[in-house]
Every structure is written in structure tokens, then in C-alpha cells.
Figure 1 (cartoon, rainbow, N blue to C red):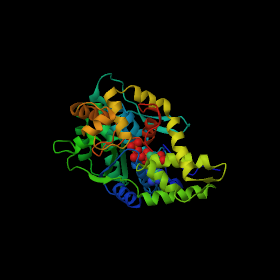
Figure 2 (tube, helix red, strand yellow):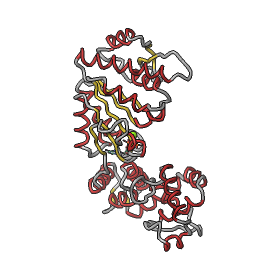
Figure 3 (cartoon, protein in one colour):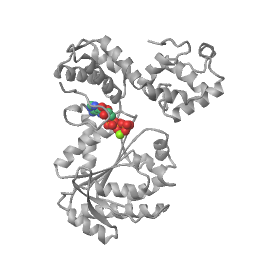
Figure 4 (tube, rainbow, N blue to C red):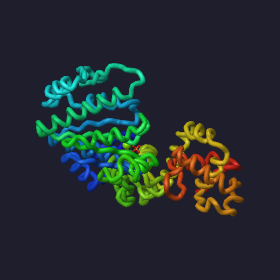
Amino acid sequence: MTIPFRVGELVTGEFFTDRVEEVERILGAMRDPTRLLVYGERRQGKSSAIRFAAERFEQDGGVLLWVDVSTASSFGDIARRLISSVPYSWVWRQDLQTKLLRASVRIEARTDLAGNPVLALALEPLPGSTEHGKEELQRSVRVLDKLAEERNVKIAIVLDEFQQIAELVDRGEWVLRDLMQTTHNLSFLCAGSRASLIDQMLSKDGAFHRFFEPLNIRAMDPEHLAAWIGDRMRGSGVQPQDGVGHEIVRLVGPRTQDCLQLARAVFVAGQQEGAASVETVKAALRQSAMQDGDRFETAWSSLPRSQQLLLRAIALGEEELFSSKTARKHGLPPSSSISRALSALRAKRHIVEGEEPRIDDPFFRVWILIRAMPDGLPGGS
Ligand SMILES: Nc1ncnc2c1ncn2[C@@H]1O[C@H](COP(=O)(O)OP(=O)(O)OP(=O)(O)O)[C@@H](O)[C@H]1O
Ligand SMILES: [Mg+2]
């Protein structure tokens, strides 16, 4: 039996659901030179929505260049990733190579790990020089822009986790802004999680104030997600009892990935009997949380006591964190320390930013309730 849910990778085809309007918007932005900001909470499905739209874009002859900024360590890396994502079989490849050489950017043909030929920028290593990589990136992007114009081809550049550019060099986001503003035939799709870094870049004094067309990837409609999860299970041989899909979304929603992760665990648990009940869902949630126990324990033990106390209270669903009743009940520190602990937990991404206090990872929440309550007994429901 194949598992009908994929988790932790970019999903396409039958593993992808919903997002009809978002995919249309993304596709439109790829086809006409646009600067689109695809943002939303973590694990909601930003990258998958772009990947899904990209398949249609590529089928129509568009060229999509995908750069993951989160693991790049310099502008030079971004330039290299950009060029190596150019499809080797592309009809205008020769033209691109010639133009890059003319722009004094050295390129080489190499083979990737799978043995396929790829293009690669060969930057001279100049240790410590950020200017260097910046210039190569500018030149490479301008060459692509020219090619798009002369050959009338559609080229879309995806910068995933683009906000990390601000961490690469001082004022890195302004370099990116300049790059996007001085090209006219390329589409730029920047994706990132809505965190303080993005907020800051979009603010009045930020590099991207009123710069992008925004597209918010929100939580999926819970009814749709619950029904789809049920259908996928049924289609692969596990009969879900009434309410299984809803229970999954209720317990770990609203992030798509969390729902899919639990759905997968429920499916696997139900495989032997060919059925899954609401009880299967509860057991699978506990099991999934405990499977990640090592990671959660490390995270927990690295937190100061005030933050641990606060997390316990939030895990139990406490909303009035500053009331004296809550403070007594959970042994919380004085209000000023609570504010500081909350900011620290937000910065560490344990708590969702800018909303009612909520633990970011629902599996961590369950682990806290099972393993980290003061009396060692499971708390909450
Ligand atoms: N439209 C979808 N249909 C089905 N599953 C989805 C969909 N979108 C996301 N998922 C699930 O969520 C997981 C994470 O998706 P994705 O990486 O696209 O999210 P993201 O918002 O880019 O996350 P991050 O904040 O980590 O960058 C996928 O591996 C998949 O399990
Ligand atoms: Mg992503």
C-alpha cells in the first residue's frame, strides 16, 4: 500500500490539494514580469504552491530558476545556485553561456550528483570579499534579463526564504531591491515566513516598502483539508471512521504540514486493520510527539526556568498570562519577566509571532503536556 501523504518535501500532483486561486496568481506572476511576495506562517505550503504552479509554467515553455536563500552563505552562492538551476537542455543555453562570458563571468559545464550536465558559475575565490559575489550576481541577473528580452522567453526567479538575504551582508536586502528594480523582463517571486525580518523589510523605512504584490498563503479551509485527508486514506485502503479528518485538523491545525504529518501517522497506524478511528488519531499524535522526544528534550532543557514555566501554562491553554490568578496557579514570575520570557520564546520561534500565545509546533505542545508538567503527570486534554 502506498502512503497517500507526503511530508517535508515540496508536494505536487495528487499529493497536492486546494490553493486554486493562489496557484493562478503565482502562475500569472511567472508569466508577466512581476515582483510577487509569497508569505505566510511557517509550514503552511508556500513553497509547494510555487512548485505546483511552476510545473504548468514550465510546460508552457517558461524557465524557472529556483534559489534557496536559507542555506546560502554569500551573494556568490546565490549567483552560483541561480546559474546551476538553468536547465542544461534549454534551447538558449549556448546564447546564455556566450553572454555570461561576455559579461566576464566564468562558467563551466559540470555534472551533478545524479550525473546530469549542469552549468555552474566558477567564481574566483576571494576570501572575505562580499563585493565580489554581489557583482557576479548582478551581472548574471542582467544577462538573464537581456536574454529574456531578446529571445522573448519567460524567465521567473524564485528566491525561497528570501528574507535571509538581510543576514548575508549588511543591507543585503537593498542590493536585492536594486537588482529587481533594474531588470524589466524577469519575474521575481520571493517567498518567506512572516517573521520580524520580513515585517521590518516591508515597513516604511524598509527596503521593500510597497515594493511587492503580496500573496498571503493562509491556513487551508479546515473542512476541505479534513475531507481530503479522509478521501486520501480511503483511496489507499484505510477506512476512516466519521470525524477522523476533522479530529486531525482540530488537534494539530492550522498548519498544513502538521496536519499532513499526523494524517500520515494515522494512516500507517491504521494500515494493518484497514481502518482508523478517532482513538487511532489520539494515539498517533502521542506517538508522533514522543518520536521527536530527543529533539524536544534538548530544546526544553536549553530554556531558562521562566520560559519553561510559561510554555507549560501556554501548553495548557492559558490565555491570561499576566493575571495574578494564572501567576499563582503556574508559579509564573512577575509581569516584567513574563514579557521578557515571551519575547525570547518568540525569537526562538517556540511561540507564534504576533497572535494569542500559541506554541508553534503542536507536537512539541503535546510532548510538554506528557513529559514536562510539574508533577510528572500528563496535563491538559
Ligand atoms: N497544497 C498542499 N497539499 C497537500 N499538502 C501540502 C500542501 N501544501 C503544503 N503541504 C504539506 O506541508 C508540507 C510543507 O509545505 P511547504 O514546504 O510548501 O511549506 P512552506 O510554507 O514553504 O514551509 P516553510 O515555512 O518550512 O518554508 C509539505 O511537505 C506537505 O506535507
Ligand atoms: Mg518553504
